[in-house]
Structures are given as C-alpha cells and as structure tokens.
Length: 159
Image 1 (tube, helix red, strand yellow):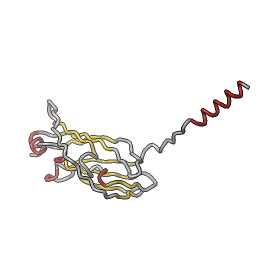
Image 2: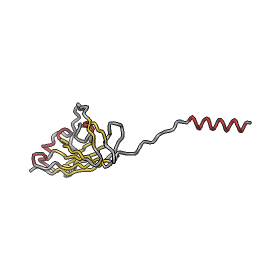
Image 3: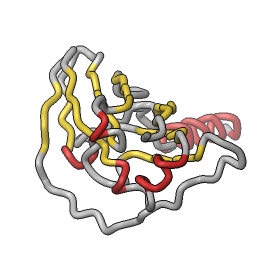
Image 4: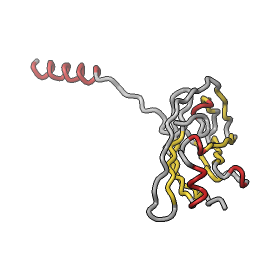
C-alpha cells in the first residue's frame, strides 16, 4: 500500500511538471555587408538580407540592418596604430510600423549611413582607413530570430 501511494505520488508530480516547447532554433537568413560603391558614398554600407528558408518571413522594416540606429551593432576603429575607436552617436530612434514579407529565396537591400553611428566620420576618413565591425540579428514579427551574424569591412581613406 505504501509503495502504491509513493508510485501514485511520483506519477502525480511527474505529470504536473510543466513541459517546455522548444522553438525552432533560428531563421535561416544570410546577411552581407560591404562598402557602398562610389566616392561620394564611402561612408555608407550596403546591406543585403537573404531569406534562405522555405517560408516567408514577416519583418518590421525598422528591424532591418538599415531600418534604425539600433538594429545593427557597429564599431569603427582607425586602422593605423594606436587603433583608436571612433566616438559613437546615440540619437533617439523614431521607428515606423511598416512590415515587409521576405519570400523564400528573396533578398532585400538597403544602406547603412555610418554618419548616424559615428561622430567625426569624415574627419577620420581624411586621415586613415577604418575597420568597421558589425553584428546583426534578425527578429521577425512573430518573435523568431536568426543567429547573431557578424563581420567586418575596411573603409578606405578618402584622398
């Protein structure tokens, strides 16, 4: 009888433990960030987001790499020793409610204006090349996320 009570108690405890549903790991996207071609736009980065999955992704346009100041992490460092980082700007971001649907296999492009991120960008580029480190994670409207992606680009000095 005592064993039966213990067994029933164990089943009760085991059945009352909440179960956790593990969501699909990550949205399958790739991000490419490069220098925007053209002398007048050397302080702009070109960003491409590609949906590599088999389903459409609904995205707030403000969460795209170019959609808001805080959607992408950027850090810029002078290439020459002592490799000083550029001071950053931290403006208030006014984000819009627009959403887009990125179909399977489709890509979307935009520009990241580095002047929005860094103080004295033009002055720094007159003196030295810059190494710009970037990091981005896509968050869809439904809350699903991509893995955090990262890389770097070399921004050449202006002559």
